[in-house]
Length: 135
Image (tube, rainbow, N blue to C red; front, side):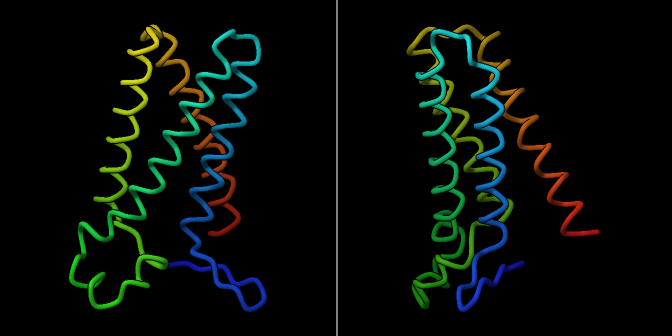
């Protein structure tokens, strides 16, 4: 597990990276949707889906490691659900966004366009930050 130390504070490195990914995806969407009338609605759904993803990813530690959580509840601050938690969070966030899109009658074309641009923004930051961390 990577951590970032700023003075006496120690931050979970993965959490910081995921927040950066989400921020990059949000900025790309904000630019991409600048002329769409549904911009505020879509951005709100995207932000809510990202927060939901983050909470499920971090909280999945309780589901996948209940004994460790019961013995040491503070472990939830430092650990996450790993790959299984990542996939569970992704599935639930996508289902949430799909549910909201269907409820607002957004077309599949718009939904795929939004998802693609968000993913591109996240990948851009991923490779930029990965290059700085690894190299």
